[in-house]
Length: 164
Image 1 (cartoon, rainbow, N blue to C red):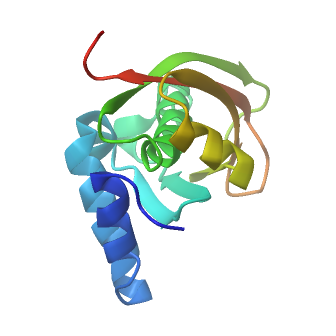
Image 2 (image 1 turned 180 degrees about the vertical axis):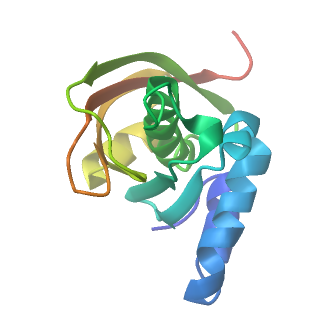
């Protein structure tokens, strides 16, 4: 799939590097663009035009009072995975915006969390071809013991940078 914006060109270029270098470079790029994600040390494990897989280690700076990843950090992880993926397809003359998120915390998280967001080819085409719209994405967030501690749904919108 061909990149249609600046972010997509950077990601495509980084994905041509050796596998051991991709994740650190993608994480650095993302951390610079989204300061809060950089502060929390969100790691980009896999990023291509149809899937984003990001992780967050259970470290002190993102823990809650019971020693697991804080609810707000889980939201950040899901938002980051879905937003990065949508951002790859929104043209440079448009702005992606998080419109809403629904998070249902169903289990206690154990250890590191991994968020996976995916788009179908039809969804990618819709994002690329539509000037102003929104899309709903389910993000799967699992912990170290493969439990899904939160059911996460994100609604992303995009609008033209210049209002008519």
